[in-house]
Length: 393
Image (cartoon, rainbow, N blue to C red; front, side, top):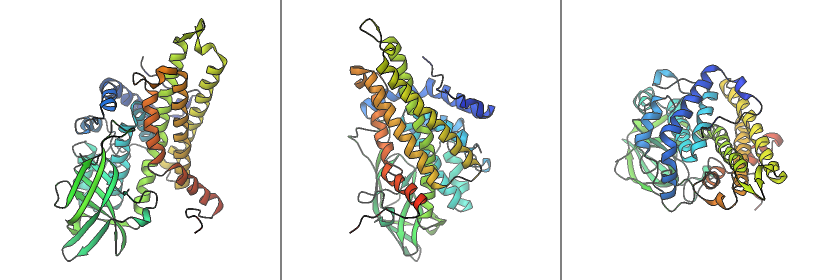
């Protein structure tokens, strides 16, 4: 059964014809070409072959959609990009992770902080899906505490020498290059590190219970020498990587709605067909209460994401507002996955149905690009003016 969308409050009426057309085009592409591949990839933990899928996504203008056309991108607005993320995560979080990483964590820093030469070299290739990048920030011993990162770049006469390790990096083993953040004597700086450079290794991380259709791994740097032109010249201090994270968090806020909608639709259809005690389980009050709760929370999440998208397009969105949307909408997706699993009963743990897969994936989304606790503290600091990121020693 083709997905028709969940739109209880007629939010479609707020979208432009172009926004709806793009969303529907992406939805059709995913249903025809991607959905059949996801279940096997998740079950066998064989990541989707993004080297093959990325060029198709590039043809549709999905990668780096909000970046200007002069760099080979679609030049779309943020609402359109959000709708893309929604459709992609409805299929699987691994796909939305790829789209958000490439767009918000790889292309965005090059566009915002790179030299014109770096922009002209990398952005068109990434937009077409001919090259794949990754974002090196999280470390084995440093997750939320980015300021304490241990990766170091040492300045030398003819360039830089990079040492350190980055972990839980999406597209780590297949990326053609990494945007890596490191401590320097000048503060935190960003660097482009190409695949195959001496002292740079990329490995795949297996045995995951979540994001099994995604390439996740580790980046390691051992006296890795970089020329001066590999540094992002305008990326200075922690504000640079944090601004990239806000782009990715925005995509998550929309993507989580897609996962929630898929869980809701799966549960609704199942409840109307599954009979117990001589009647479909959708006729029972407790089941209806679960479905209604899911619909209410999805509708609120949609309105939140829509308003945030318009604020992003007007360049008025604040980072605490982005945190609020990420925190709320991921929590909604988490609840919907769990509730859908309950409605499906024993069948809910079968990979023949999507909720258990979404349930596992959302646990990663709940943690990455800022944990739920971190987003709580970001919002708390904004409304009180008091930072509470450190406990009392």
